[in-house]
Each structure stands twice: as structure tokens, then as C-alpha cells.
Image (tube, rainbow, N blue to C red; front, side):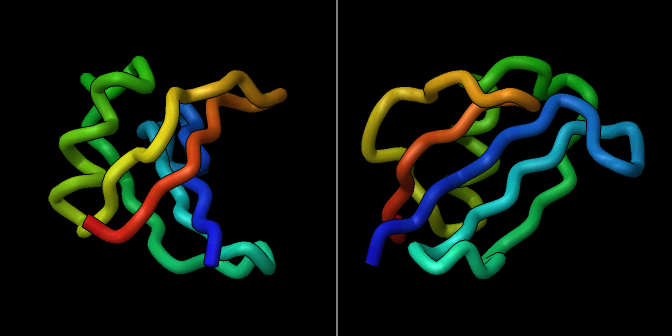
Length: 72
């Protein structure tokens, strides 16, 4: 099953958010990140703490960045 992390720099709460979705697009995990997580590279530690590891580089999306992830 392919999982994707979607990083948005400002979620509804005003803080950065990352959402992990499965290959059907269903939400698996959603994390509100600290305001210091303003770049995709700063999200990696938060993903790892939540049990996910990036398996390829971040790519740009219309509202942030996306990357494939696997269970850590």
C-alpha cells in the first residue's frame, strides 16, 4: 500500500500540518506541527516520531509539498 505525506505550511489552526493518506486517499494520520516547521525538511523528525519515514524527496504541490512515506 502506498502512503503519501502532504505538508501544508499553514493549516486551519494557523500552524503547519502534515497529513498521511493511504493509496485510496483516506487519512491515516494528521499532525499539527510547531510553527518552526516551515520547510519540508523540518517535518521529517515529526513524521518519524509519528511512525513514518519518507521514502523519496518532497515535491511541490499547489498548497505545499508531498512525499511518499512508509511505516518507520
